[in-house]
Length: 98
Image 1 (cartoon, rainbow, N blue to C red):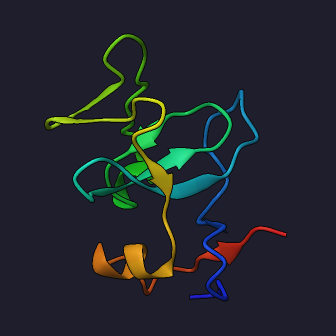
Image 2 (image 1 turned 120 degrees about the vertical axis):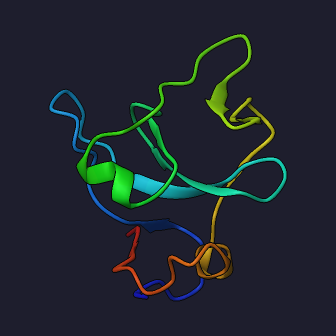
């Protein structure tokens, strides 16, 4: 893991042809870790879903991402190294934001 503990981590660039965001780990209510583009706000449940572009585009009013989870404003936070490790994603090539 390349992050030095600042919590500002990203995995890959968003695969969307219309966006230039970074896919970052996010902790939702209940402690579940998902991946979210910091620009277009698309959400992936696992790193494997990124390549297939199997994503969710949450929106008002419920901000649902499926499986009883949501990304309502004010209910989530960007994940840090400990969060991605607990999700089983610690061995991935995480990068640190400048």
